[in-house]
Image (cartoon, rainbow over all chains, first blue to last red; front, top):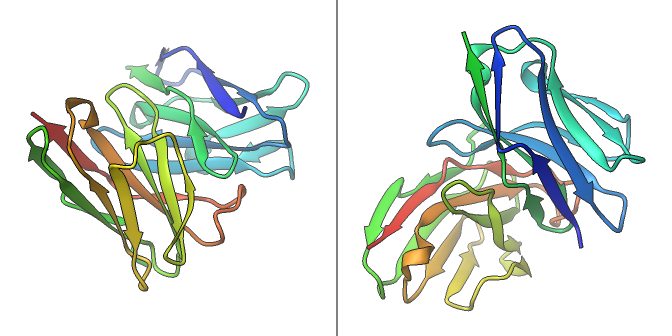
Length: 110
Length: 115
């Protein structure tokens, strides 16, 4: 069955530090993978998606993710955290419906 | 271009009641998906509609039902509300037939509280 696991329910970084949010997937078919961000009391906003083209995917707000088939991973990174990056981040695999991970709450310290 | 809108924003119901939530798709989108997001969890797929027909359903009981209208707007109906139905209900629209690569665009959600 297709699923994603997000490692770490909470991640805290200092402003300007590297952001690394981990996602591992399980899929019996070539996966389509997504990262979404959710700000408090809002819906989900697409950051980026992988659809079997380039393995390094660049998204909005300086985020990027690398698809690694050998590791079944699709980790999200950003070189330098900004206070406005504080939010909940969800990794998802698309089967027919979208299957989301439990989310990682990112806190950015000044 | 208008994004996905949902109404109402918040709703309080009592156990056993029925509720209808509404969603307007992003302009030009013909597929609508509904998700339930319980507090502290990721969204869970309820069902999807493509051109007014149900196009997939998650692991939710029949008291969760939906409709899609000719203008591609949609409703989610929940009968016999239970306390565990308290959640944020998200609607997402996309252009396509619900394919795996389709990007879904989410609305802000409806927060349902069941007392």
